[in-house]
Image 1: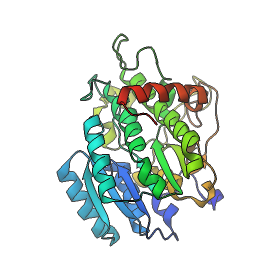
Image 2: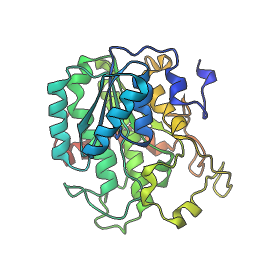
Image 3: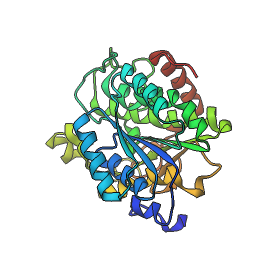
Length: 318
């Protein structure tokens, strides 16, 4: 089965023939883009799906649309603002009161290349939303994940992690000149390191975690990009300076690896991996842009360091 999957595989291809009845999934940012398609695929296979987002109207519309598209009545919407840690805490409390078990947590929501702004708690927006919000959410939902084990946590990283490692000396760009792409890269590196951190700490308790690069997909995530960004946004194939053709995936293809990370039987007993195109990716030398991950994105020492920083920043300790 694995050999048949690749860059053009869709999320619906991944769930084909699978029965996920009785399993519950939570997809952040599930009312649009990759999150919506991820939720649609899981729901079509019978899973109970909770989509979370900060816009009540979009949540309501997406729940109705997903229910109609899949014929699955077990789809729910819950309010969550990942840029506000109080909202994350309230969501986690409400979720646990409503749902005793969780099988799949797919940390999909995010922001990309936005102008300099801060979360409600004062963190740089991309690091605060993409990483810290999901770090706290995943930590607070550990009780229901343990109750639903074996379970999986999926963190959407990106090939964009190659824009920057973690700048531990200035995580929030308080002293460094703000660069929207370095900020985005740092947040995506953090997502990968976070997946490694959760897997190392909770694999013995039945919870495995994965980082996912979905590919290049133009969704609402790109709303902050300028015309100049699009012109400059081209892939590099191989070593630095060897430019290749930018490969764009459809939303259906982009959601495939997230769904595969959550449900693939091939990944039983595995964890702490960086996945792309429905396969485990390999480490590549810095300068390679088209595939794989850089060493710093899956480095255990960097993961532990980020974990300690994150615990302190969000006020949660594992």
